[in-house]
Amino acid sequence: MTPEARRSRGRPRRHDRAELLDHTRDLWIERGTAGVTIRALSTATGVSNGAIYNAFGSRDGLLAAVWVREAVKFLEFQRSAVEKARGTDDSAADMVVAAALAPAGLADTGDPGAQLLLAVTADDLATSELTGEQRSELFALKKSLGELIIGLADAVWGRRDHRAVTLIRHCVVELPGTLLLRRGNVRDPLARHALEHAVRGIVTAPPPPASA
Image (cartoon, rainbow, N blue to C red):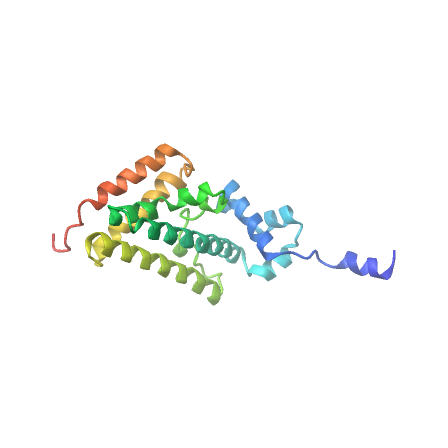
């Protein structure tokens, strides 16, 4: 064996961050968060445990990195869907429906990350194991989603108070999470039908004022 070959043999395998995130996403979809471990990722990729820790800092950092990447794509897709609905005859309601159905629409493009997006929240992932930068990324996305929800409440009822915003959050976070994602029905047309009509029913009446 040549000296060059011996040196090459002793080097850790080079890895691509995007590929590691892809493999982590696939493990998450297949096994849930409990199945995402540094050891499992190392086995799937051939990258050493140490190299993975160096790249992400911790298992929690790895989960956060995957969620951030998928959430960035999703929020771009969701905002685009909302904008497309803005000019329709019933635009305010259609905009909320578009936001609610965005996980299903993203799944239709073949993006597997749609199954992760509402399975956990930024708050769930923001553990003490994260770096300050990782926590900042999570909460920037949380803020971005919050701004979208506030804008939808304003579009539907001309209100930005806590009750109006909470009701829109039910429409675009909790209901899709229950009907589409947590039960694995992201491609199920019946689940989509139920979600759309539930959302349309909710936005027909404004929430009661805080004094009610």
